[in-house]
Amino acid sequence: MISPAPSEDDKEFGLKRRIQIRFAIELYQVGILLDDNFFCDLLRNLLGRSKTGKTSSLDLLGVCTFVKYGSECLLGRLPKPMMLLAQKANMKLEG
Image 1 (tube, rainbow, N blue to C red):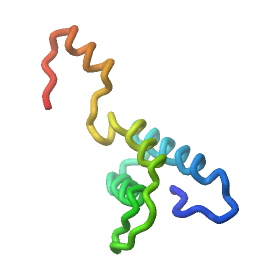
Image 2 (image 1 turned 45 degrees about the horizontal axis):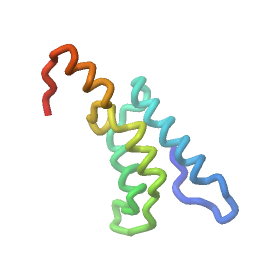
Image 3 (image 1 turned 30 degrees about the vertical axis):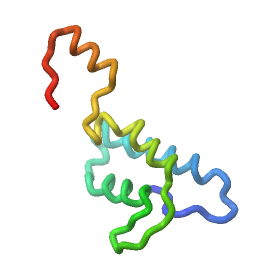
Image 4 (image 1 turned 180 degrees about the vertical axis):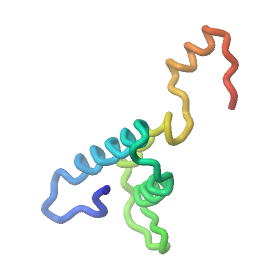
């Protein structure tokens, strides 16, 4: 589903990959893509690791996209506006 590696003549690879990452996260948010292992493999790939132990280069823009759009639903981080709203409502936040 996510492009594995850039071809030599593909100058738009980074943009395409970031769009694919964001789309996969949106599919997870609406309940269409439910495979948690997919995101573990994706993050491992973005960090330059594979299941076989082979290393490749770090995709920093891909990691940033993953964290920006997946931080709430995949990583459990609550956005700052939501935290402030909860504090104003005197709700106790765990964690």
